[in-house]
Image (cartoon, rainbow, N blue to C red; front, side, top):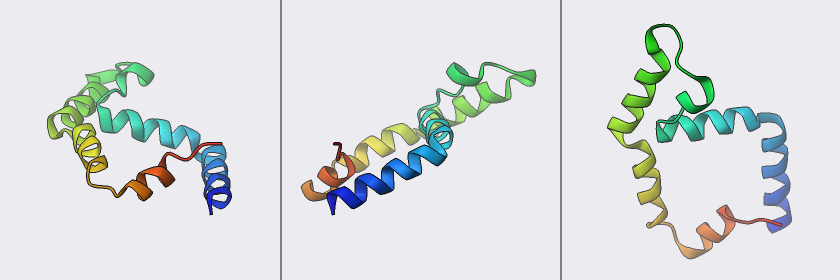
Length: 78
């Protein structure tokens, strides 16, 4: 099971690492660090909304409700 999950994560990251990074930064309100501030500061506004809604904090709070076995699987590394 562990090897299968690792392989799935590896393949997913290989094909979609850019998307994972964008979503990680989006949820924390940190897109400007990567994309900078463009015309009309649209990226900055997205960061403000993300921080206002607190999506990063909600994600952190979710970890507290996972069973130990789920957290172990999600953190699995080789």
